[in-house]
Length: 346
Image 1 (cartoon, rainbow, N blue to C red):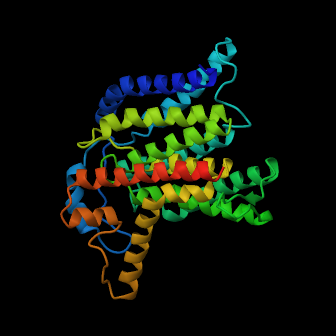
Image 2: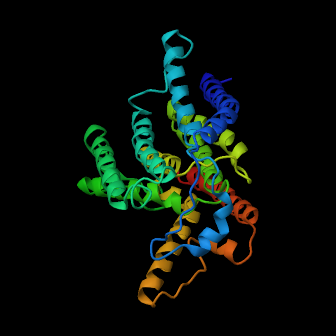
Image 3: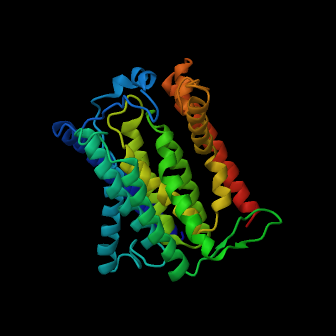
């Protein structure tokens, strides 16, 4: 059997075992520390009364579950360094050519989300979380640093669309603002699709499995190992996050993991194809834009009972589990289409 496959799935299963065994103790620690979820009462415009009514029962559930994914993954990175030192593996998961940018993304955005979540839990500040302006500045600085690394250090100035009859586009310095826009949009869009037990994280799992395959196909074996490790960490998380969720991930996980996914799309030149699997999140984001625009331009008249759209489905009578499982099915179908499209356009 290929030694790379053995290493990839070995690290993946080890990540799952660590996450699965430690999570119950971590949940009890969160409960003792009273790190509980707070349900928002304010919307972007006005009050979120209907949202609060639907999800009031989720209050006082432990949050900051990000630790069981990101800390577990970084533990595996540390373990790989130790194993390399003693000669058990040829390369650690800390590799400049493949994983530096990915790990930098996870760590940097993780810090932002962690502070935001802690402020919300402890009701710090007027808005109970970091201001949108501060988060935007942080993400701009981070994404600008990433864009500079791509452009200056890696010599990246071309976007390969991987579409039939359409060649790659040399965009020069425009690569930098495009990179910044993509990372900021990707990091924030997943929050729009959160708040249902397991929804965003199941969709995230499908995406990382696909990238585990894509990176392996491109001979980026360390990056593939990192993708598969994240997948298994997500599986351990979802075991405890299926309704009724024992704990929640919240902003710190969504910001870091989704920004990292789009970074991988840039690293593997599969940006255009990722739009296929991202379709649910695009439509969810559009539902919010349409709702806010309608309220502003039509004297507070709404298009949906609640935006984003998955909350509208709840409001019209769909059970939470029905919304989650049906959107998961759509996500799985889109993942299969994504892989087929990738193979066709190779």
